[in-house]
Image (cartoon, rainbow over all chains, first blue to last red; front, top):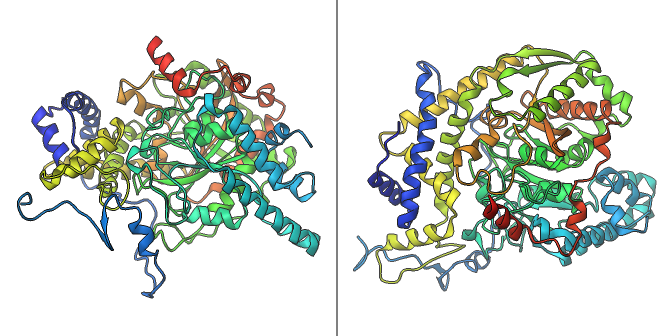
Length: 100
Length: 531
């Protein structure tokens, strides 16, 4: 049986940068444990010496010439920003009074 | 043909023929399909965005190309692309320039793409016409289209049931004659399962066959884009247009793409002839616990029909099938948790700014309010599986089991040319039936997700009805062997061409056109409340 605690759920939510309400955390604690229990079947399999598969097609070292090509106009990209100043995206302050 | 409704009932290749013969115009086709969407999409809710003006403009451009070709002569008309003037329903995660694509998520609400996806470019070059974007489970995570931020889509066979998912909008749109063709994506069954549940044809191509450039990412080692149609020939026509190498997706393969529709026999006898001497594997592990007897009966009848037409049916063993679910539900959420880290409320999309708070508070609030429950669940699972101390036990272990699942298929394909199996263990289920238990929802894809884990192509074709609802037959092939799947699917159509169920329209088409029918959103709420 998986035994993810409420504190574990809160820690993972923080790592994932998900702000979750009390009822969401409570529900997720039960659901994640139930899902993790399904994963337990894998432990029964002996995978000693079995190489991992990260991708299924045998393509490797795909290279292309390093040439300058047109990119999307900056104005089009900046126009989608929730907050901008001139040619800059506004990001939350990470230094000073509230940063760390 | 003057009745516009009748135009929507044609198959795509018939539309192509009619356009070339001058029986109707691309504008007629666009108007007919837009009228059909307008009249019936309230109760169906297959679409989350419709752009009538852009659609009609594309249709007019197609008519102009036709006119030029006609002036040049028969040879030029012959060379026109198959899809010229044909409406194609795009899943809401295919980006198109200047239009929204939300991937079914509030976090992308209001975003307009500054560019076209690779397949959107290919489809435009072929002269296809885009009515708009179709509904889907948020970020393609789900098997019912109930996890859309914009409300659920109904199944045209029974408006109290789901169309499957995550590409449920495209499947429902094609089934309900809103478009002859549709685009979906399949990470664990999201094309094949909705195809099965709506009585349409759907292909999940080999991983690497279609460029993922411009497709909102879910799980990058599993995601593939693929076509829906109402028959195999149309589906093959769409696949031939979107497949092929694109240097903007380094996982898209340089493997040559056959001219699928040209290599498919049109006559039934000729089409069925490919079955003679073909060896088809039947894996006992795919007749899973909880499979409905009616579904199993239809699939076994279909296998018998293939055998009667000359195919040799061989039992094959895929012993690691039962581990597919756990393997998939580690790998896919892990990759999703990394892919979805980009939604930070800084460069685009939904953003919440908590003025004066710790900078992390902005991210927490943006992502906490922008993502829906299923997406949060998967991000949590993936983050946990990749976190310090658990990587070896979960992610690495799953990747090793992935090797074993792939080896099962490799061994089977030494003995057989393709594998036949059910697509979904059940017919379409009622709204809400699997919402309370995520694991029950995940089991909807038990027969499809091993195919993604192994990177193989899989085709779902309709094989009759159980309790009046469609059942899908799944054909699984060797890597890059989509052509054989199309040939086998076409052969199955040919051997069952006279079956009574083939001439049936979706059972609730009448209700869809009745203005008194409640919207899909209201109906789903009522079904859930009554349960």
